[in-house]
Length: 101
Image (cartoon, rainbow, N blue to C red; front, side, top):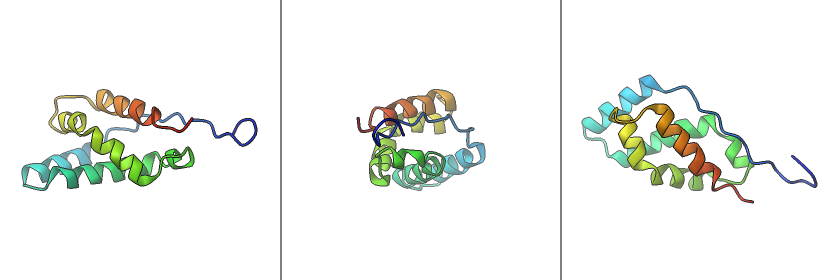
């Protein structure tokens, strides 16, 4: 907190790449699981690491919407076309732009 009850925007860290999860998520997609279901699992995994966003004004439905809007980049990461750092750092920026001012 700063000043008169103003909440600072959090600085999200880049979590370690979820290698085991990535393989399971990719296998699920290849086995026919709907990509939206896999995205929901990715969002749940990220939410567990970035719960600070809720204190800064982004609730879970809004967070899920941001992750869903990043679906193409997440797909490219799952498929091995993007690195975790490339994908996740872009998502950090996207979430950061949605914090209330």
